[in-house]
Image (cartoon, rainbow, N blue to C red; front, side):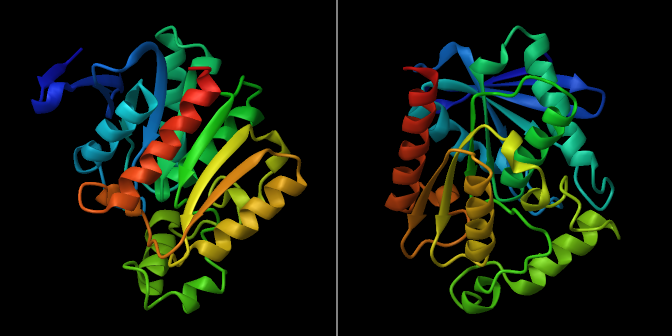
Amino acid sequence: MQEEIVEEGGHTVEKVAIRDGLYGYWVTVPESAQDYAVLFFHGGGFTMGSTEDHLGLCIRLARAARSRVFSVDYRLAPEHVFPAPVEDAIAAYRYLQSKGYLPHRILPVGISAGGNLVLASLLALHGQNLTLPPAAVCMSPATDLQFPGESVTRNQERDWITPARLHAIRTVYLAGHDPADPPASPVHGALKALPRLYIQVGTHELLLSDVGTFVEKARWAGVPVQVELWEGMFHCWQVFAGQLPEGQEAIDHAGAFIRNVQGR
C-alpha cells in the first residue's frame, strides 16, 4: 500500500502500485464484498482522464455492484501511444490474480476509451491462453477507431463530443498504427472468444452505429450480449449521475448485472 485516503460518505480510496509507473486505486464502500473486484477503466479518449475525475462514478458503481472497484490509471498518449494502454489493462488483470482474485471473481468495466480497453484486453488475454472473467460491462464503448458509423454525422449536433475529437483521438493514440488492428478496434477481432457482455449506449451518441455493428457481429459469433439503448442520452452520461437521474439509473442497472453474474 502506498496511500490510503478516507473520504466523506464512508468510502475509502487506496492507491497501490501495479508495477513501476502504473497505479491502481481500490474504491471501497461499506456495501463492498471483499472477495469480488470490479476492474474499472476510465474514459478520456486515451489522451486524458484518471481515476480522480471518474471517482464519483467508481463510488456509485461500487455501491450498485456491492463490490470493490479497482480503477486503473493506465498510461496516456501522446507520451504513451497504442498499445501501451492495452498492455496496462492486461497488467492490471494479472495483478488482481496475483493478489488472489480468481478470474470468476473479476469483472471488467469500462467507459468510452475504457470500454475499448475492456474488449481489447479480453481478446488479448484469450490470445495468451489466459482464463477470462465470466462477463464484462461496457458503457458508451469505442469499438472501432475508424469511426465509420453513420451516427458520427447524424448525431453530431446531439452529442458533446465531435467528429473532430474522434479524428484527434485516432491520430494521437494510434500514432500511425492501423486502426483496423483488433487491439485498437475490437470489432475486427475474433469475437467468439469474448465472454458475456452488457453494453449501454445512448441514442444521441456519435458512437451509436459503431456499437450497433459490434453488437451484431458479436451476436453472430455466439457471444451473449445484453444491450440497453438509452433514449436521448449522450456519450458517457453515466459520469453525470450526480445531476442526471438517467446516469444513476444506468449505473444501478450495471450494478444489478454485475451482482447477477456474481450470484449475489
